[in-house]
Image (tube, rainbow, N blue to C red; front, top):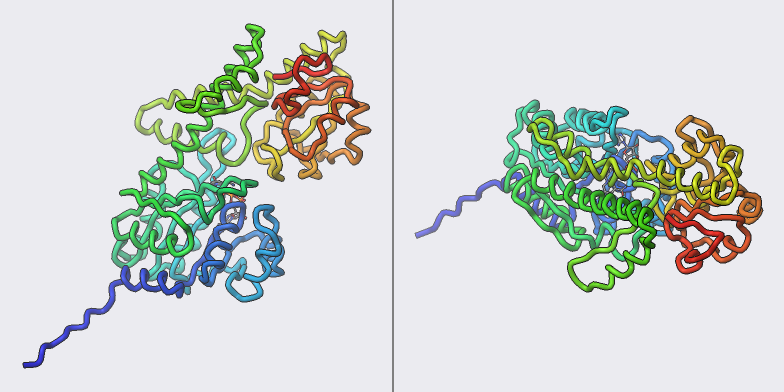
Length: 448
Ligand SMILES: NC(=O)c1ccc[n+]([C@@H]2O[C@H](COP(=O)([O-])OP(=O)(O)OC[C@H]3O[C@@H](n4cnc5c(N)ncnc54)[C@H](O)[C@@H]3O)[C@@H](O)[C@H]2O)c1
């Protein structure tokens, strides 16, 4: 007797997983910024053929030449991937029709009203919807409110095209956790959370990402993955808000907040060190939690921790400027007409990102009080103030330090020679404890 073997055609799920295993899947990344470019590089290095798509012609021109514009990705690392054809870059969205896997890494800012600005996600999804086909997996990476993947992407991509999610195509959310400037944890070795719209969606996405990234943590839904990202960022925002308030309380009581924090940080368990500063900056921490508080309004719920932390953090630049004013007063000086040098304007040390930086608020508030303001930042050659004026980093740092009535340390870049700056300065307001021990009990220094 002959046994009859029935060959089942491979399901879209199985066929995609096999393509990922064999590194044959064609991958596209929408948005080649701080998140998208490192992700594209990691997939290309794993052996995939990756197309980076971005409407920004300057970025694409640079990538085509193999030149990086993101400090975390060196040109030496990028160029061979471009040369070997593993990484292509284009402004042409029509290449999406050939793709097996698409990751969306577009910006998610806030509108002036403080509400989520979904326009970039919507624009990218609309482009993708035009070329939707069977056998594709789509992953949203942009930080957003819980429910976005299911409520916004699913109908636009699947239902509108008559495709069944989890069978014909796959959809998941996987939050990016990149911390620009960090070298120990990168896109490659930071565990990646994945949450699918269906179980099969999670499985296919884990197969894709797992082919390039070291650790994948799959959760049961896209919403759980969306919420996990917001928990991470809210955790930071709330703790920074708390420690900023502690700084204000310590000042009232005449206690050194930096000494208090260092003391608490000697506890080997149950405490995590956060430091106060002139306010929150960056594309994530000041913004993302507000996506959650906005969404919670639809559930008649006020996200109180987020709102309180946001209020305290937003007020920090104003607090810093008030403290500078008071400190000058103590010295018999006024802020009006004073020469202020803002030292460091990037939103955190050792990076070139000025988005949402409290340095911009500090500059604006000092100017409003009538001070003459200059700035220096080795990573930010020019900036645009909130009023729209262009400013250039002073060419001669030490000359500017000597000339300033007050040097305001806003960003504690490591490259600064704080000893030399202290020696040359008349007076320093240190909002980050950039000077450390040098600034302690020093009549030339006022610390936050
Ligand atoms: N930068 C970070 O440290 C970080 C960390 C974790 C998460 N995130 C999140 O990742 C997302 C992206 O952030 P980013 O820092 O990479 O932003 P970015 O501004 O550096 O890059 C976004 C890119 O998307 C491009 N873009 C805009 N519209 C597009 C469209 N319709 N199609 C394709 N590309 C488009 C822009 O030109 C830009 O190059 C945001 O949601 C952010 O909250 C950022």
